[in-house]
Length: 115
Length: 118
Image (cartoon, rainbow over all chains, first blue to last red; front, top):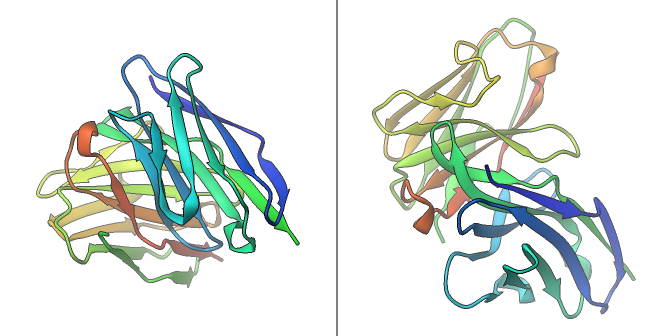
């Protein structure tokens, strides 16, 4: 079975500060890892994904994540937070479900950006 | 990117009634569609997966007779919550996938439907 654990349900940063959202995965096979962002009362938007190849993945809005197999991690970072980054962030791993393959989500991390 | 729409965005219904939620892929053909539910301040939980033209496969603990899923075409899937009760109140989100396997398994999510059962 595949799963992800997001460390910290709430993260608060100052505008302009580094954003670091942590995600660790568990997988019996090479994982496919995703970060999604959700704004209030909206669906999920893909920030970035890792499947194979380069372990440093760049996404939209200045976010990036690095796949580290030795640490089973896929942490999300952004050098400088903007107020508009305040949202819920979900890490997910693509894994088998009863029906084939689906996304297994972490519990989410709420990012608060303060002025 | 690929766009998925959901209708309605919000619905309020009385207990015991049925509600249908539509999920459409607007600019791509979704061979697989997924239905999730999300309770407040919680993560998304997969309810079922449907492939066009075949019966949906439900996750453990999800009542297939209560949550009817139809995937009649490559661009439309519907979720019907039958005999809804207040505990069914939730945020329902669909997603469409371009392929069935993990190597290209990017899911594109709809904006969600907020269901409130009185």
